Image 1 (tube, rainbow, N blue to C red):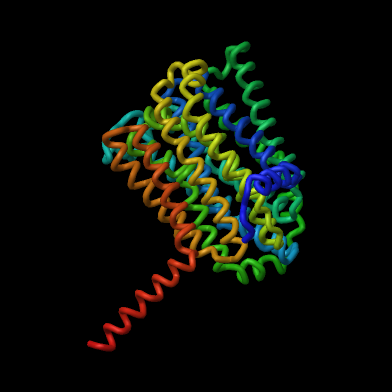
Image 2: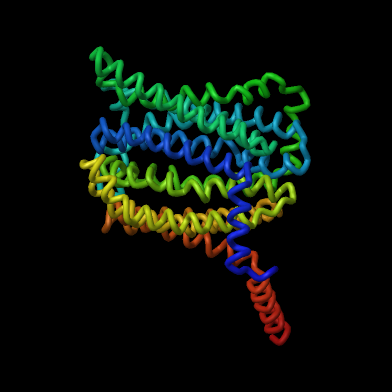
Length: 446
C-alpha cells in the first residue's frame, strides 16, 4: 500500500467529493434522516413525553418486524446484482418479501394487541397481558400490518436501485418518501387544529402519515410483483445464495438493535416515559449516522462490482470525527431551545454522539467483508453488538436510566468495530492456528 501524506490525502478527499454516486447516496441519506427526524421532532413538539414514547414504540415494533420479513434480501440484492445482473434475483426477492411481509405483519399486530407497553415502570417484571387498549378505543395495533408491509416494500425498492447502481433513483426514492411524510403530517395537524376534529386521534393520524408514503414511492416494487413468473416460486436464485442471505439476515436483525429493538425493550421493561427521553436523543443520532449509513450503502455495490473507493472511506472517517464534536457541543443548546420538556435528553445525546466514529469504521469494514462474501464475520460482529446493547440496557438502565441506554449503545458499537477489525486479520488467524496446533501437540503427548 502506498505511503499516505498530506498531499495524497487531500487529493483523495477532493476526488471523493467528485464521486457522483457517493454524493447522491449521502445527500439522499442526509435529506432522508433530516426530514425523518423532523417527523419525530414534530411529534415531540406537540405530544407529551409519554405519548411521544407511545408513537416511538409502535414504529419500532413495525421496523423490527419488517427486518424479519426482509430476510436479509436487501443486502443480497445490493451485493450480487452488480456482479451477476440477474433480474430473476430481484423478482424472487419481491415475491418472497411480499408474502413474508403479510404474514409477519399480521403476527406482529396480534402480539402488540395482547402485550402493550407500560406507561411508566422501572420494574423488569412490569410486562402486562391485557386487552384494555381495544376496550378503551386505542386501536393503534391495526396499523402494524400496513406499517410492516410498507417498510418492506420501501426497503426492497431502494435496495433494487442500489443493486443496479442507480444512485440518482435511490436519491429520488428516499427524499420523496420523507417529503410526503412531512406533507401529510402538516396537513393532518392543520386540519385537526383548525377544524377541531380528531384532535384526540392526532397520534393515529401521524402513524398514518408515516405509512402511506412508503407505498406511494414503491411503484417499482409493485411493478416487479406483477411481473412475477411461475418459475419465481421456486426461488432458485435465492436458494443459491441462501447461506449469504441468512448471514446478512442475522446481521440485519442484530443491526436493528441500533434503531428498534432497544426501544421495544425499553418500552416494555422501563416504560414509555424513559423511552420518550431516549428516543429524542436517538433521533439526533440518526442524523449523525448519515455518513456511516451512506458508506455502507454506497461502498457495498461499488466493491461488489470491483471498484475501490479509498477516497470515500477517508472522507467518511474525517466527517465522523467532526460530527461527533458537533453532536457533543451543540446538542445542549439545540434541545433547550426547541424541546424544553426534553432537557433530560441532553446528556443522553452527548453520550450517544460518541458512537459515530466506531459505527463509521464498522460500516467501512462491513462493506469490504460483505463484498468478499465473508458474511459470517459480519453477522458475528452484529450479533455480539446486539447482545452487548440489550444486556447493557437491562443492567445500566436500572441505575442510570436513559443515560445507561446510551452507554449501552456506545459499547455495542465499539464491540462491533473491534470484532470486524480483529477477526479478519491475518495476525488473529495465525494466533488461532497456533493455538490449535498447541492443543493438538498436547493431545498427542498425552
